[in-house]
Length: 278
Ligand SMILES: Nc1ncnc2c1ncn2[C@@H]1O[C@H](COP(=O)(O)OP(=O)(O)O)[C@@H](O)[C@H]1O
Ligand SMILES: [Mg+2]
Image (cartoon, rainbow, N blue to C red; front, top):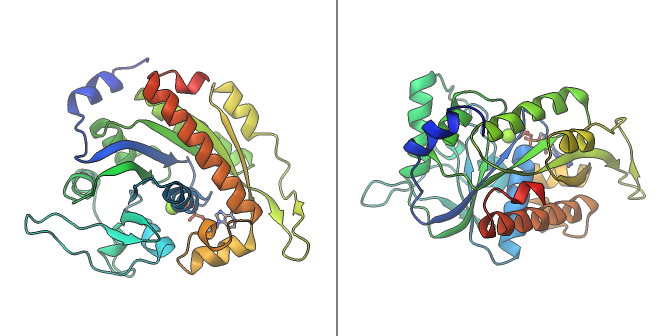
């Protein structure tokens, strides 16, 4: 590990009570499918019998409440902790459950960092095998706060098959490495289009960018997920598409990513810091 970021962060880190492992789902750019992959990976893990939570860390552009179809309003325990929502076998918390969609979020740096910490620690999480964090795009205050404060086990980085997204994905990988967090793998989302008539996958973008990037950064390539109109419709209806149509190409691709992520997690647990090189 290169800089002083990790040394400083180890001093500040605090485990989240009840949470065994934290995995960040990140990208450099918005709109590449982080939130979609996060809830569908959570659904895949829940189907495998894991107790899984999702924390929406994209405070300025929250999606998780919509993607999981959870309603507004969060109940609190007598101690004043927020109760996560539970739907589709997934425990979740999003600022989207707390604020109306039309409410603007006008918090600046220190306030946003404080809000983020509350959304992690002032929550009555049940005993979770895995907490997936749907990260905001970029490498700003929120990701840095999370990486400084949380003992993150690993990360999965999402990119579309476009140079514009891959360049920012590389920055996201660099940020995790700066904080000594292993990047378990890179997922190439929206790689090809599933024809609703024949189910054939047609290429939309030239491709050939994300896999070489993974190689260059010594990170595993977790494969690609096609752009699937049916998946998009399920997403808008608040149902992870992996649950609605588990045999679709996009659902099968995400189930494979979930298996690879879990294999990396097991390797990391057995042999910390080795998972990336496997
Ligand atoms: N594989 C996919 N197939 C179809 N639609 C997708 C796929 N991945 C993402 N989308 C759609 O793309 C849009 C952006 O995805 P989202 O998960 O919100 O991205 P991000 O969290 O990176 O900003 C959403 O409307 C989502 O439904
Ligand atoms: Mg998002």
